[in-house]
Length: 404
Image 1 (tube, rainbow, N blue to C red):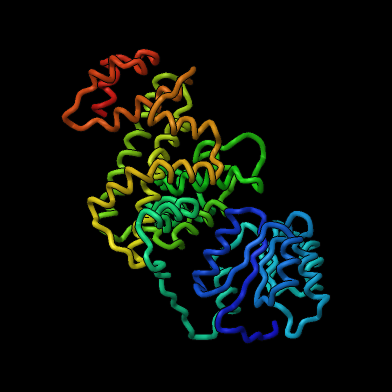
Image 2 (cartoon, rainbow, N blue to C red):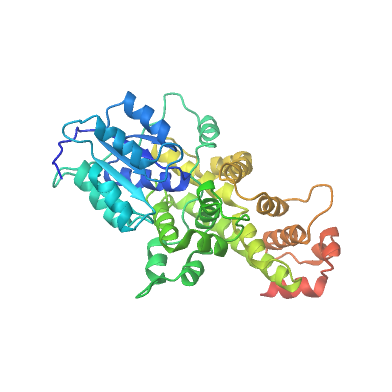
């Protein structure tokens, strides 16, 4: 490979159709060079237009791009005969020798098969973007002058990365590995209580690039559709993001409470669904995700602090949660294109609108009410509610559920 001296701030083009894979590549690259200038695109024609308009120091492209494929993007670059050659990492789901032989004459800097090996990709990027022994550190961008918390949170709503991680994902993956590879059943047990992991994997499994039939609505279905390599990459990629874990004690305490509320709701929903012969795992996932907005907002509050913003911890946190959490949750579920049926179950955990309700929606409503009860409150009022009557769940069943 020809050695290339790259500028202090490299400009990199990432061309990948799947939004979740594209985001993962961005996070891995920023972990190597946090100061990199990134352009992202989803098809080959846009990649060619960006290449014609900008000088790049590295291109990462998927062979299977829609329109102009990644191999033809590489061919176009090589026809320009730039010296030294532009570094180009070609990714592909094709691992056969014929595909490799087809790509080799165009001299890709690397040919990486999917699902990607993140360690190998990281080493490649370090070799291309860092001089030996050099480390790059980046400061968190500061707030614009005069920025208020309410304006900041409103602007962040459509850009929020989701909830902080409530699980040690590196440890979860490590525990799921055995000599034969990654055990998806064990991995599911390790991460099923994490709202962010659950939401991201379901969203990724439903993306257009993964679409293979019906909508995925549970973590188990998502893991099965994504497979071992992609599942592991996406899970580990979540830990690379900024504010992936909450370090502020006050915010972490709030997150713990909302997480526990999610866990209780999910467990009640699964038990009720099993009792009524309904879809247990779908109800469990809906319960796990119904506080995603609260958790995502807490993560944004930490980012506000890291950018130099002040936070009157108890009062302002409570006000922000009351004012913005619902919109954050709704925005994430819509932007990530979670299946409508799953979103309806999540909404039912808060309230039942007019019309006819599915039995699963009734289950979610009862489960959420059970989870919100304090230790000093009984279930008598819930037992006489319209929701419980529709489900034909009485006081004895609710008391048994409460004791578990």
